[in-house]
Image 1: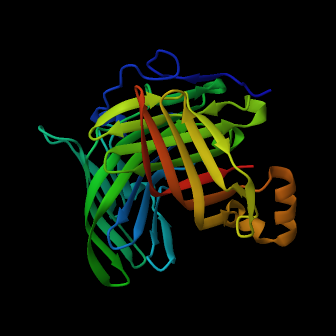
Image 2: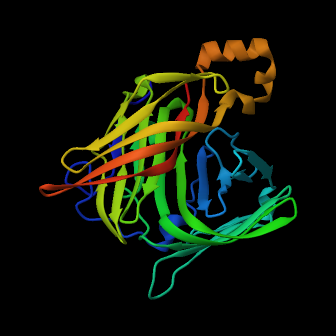
Length: 354
C-alpha cells in the first residue's frame, strides 16, 4: 500500500511563509543523490518583443526516464504566426557537467550559468543550440529568487520533489536564431529548477502551473494534485511580488476548475477557466482563449504508436496529456480595505498524468 504521508516544508505559520527563505546560489545548483530514481532539470522561458516565445530545458534525468538515461536538452520556439519548432537531443554523460555550488550546467555545447553581482540581483546566461534553432539569452532578475518554504515537498517512502525559482521575473536580451536567420531580441523571462527522487507519475495525478505579470505585480503558482491512492492531496504554492519585493508566499491556495472542453489532439478534456483564491489576499481567474500546444503524452512512447497498444494503454493508465494555454486573466489583490484589479493575458500549463 503506497504511503499517503506528505510533508510540505513551509516556514509557517501554517502553510505559508511569514519569513521567506533566502535563496542562495547552491539552492539552484545540482542536488546530488545516490538514488537511481533521482531526477533534475533547469528550465528557462521568455516572451520576446518580436512575438516569439522560447522555452529551454537542460535535464540531467527526468522522472519517467530509465535510471541510466542520458542527459538531454530541449528547445521550443512558438512563432508569431502560431507555429511551433521543437527539438531535443541527448548527450553522453561524459559530455555533461553539473555544479552543486550554483546554477552552472553544461550538456554538450549547451549551457546555463548564474552570476551574482555584489550590488544586485542574480543574472542567468543561457545558450542552447540544436538542429537549426538557437538562442543565447541573458536573464537579469527584476525580483529576488524565491522558493516555497524550504523548497521541498516530502512524500512517504523517501520520495521528494523540489522547486526553486531562480528568476521569477527577469529582463531578457540576446539573440534568437532559426535556420540561419538571427534576430536581436528583448523581452521578459522566467527561470526555475526542479529536482527530486521517485517516480512522480505514481504520485501525481495532474498539475496546473503558470504565472502572470503586470506593471506592478508578478504572480506565479503551481497546483499539484496527488493520485487518490496517495490521498488526493493538493500542493498549492503561490508567490506574489509587488515591484521587486515578494509580499506573499503561501500554500493556502484554493483552485477551482470551470466547465470542461474536449481537445482532439490531446485526447482529453481541459477546463475552460480556472480560479485561484487565497482567502482575504487575492483572487485570480484565467479564462482560456487559445490552446497553443496540446499533446497526448503517449506520443512520446514508441510502443504506443500501435493503435491497439495505445487503446490498451489508455484503458490501463488513462489519457496523459500536456496543454499550454493562452488566457486572459483578472487578478484582484486585497490591500486592507482596498482591492486592486489587474487584467491582461498570459500563458499557463496543465499536465495530466492519468
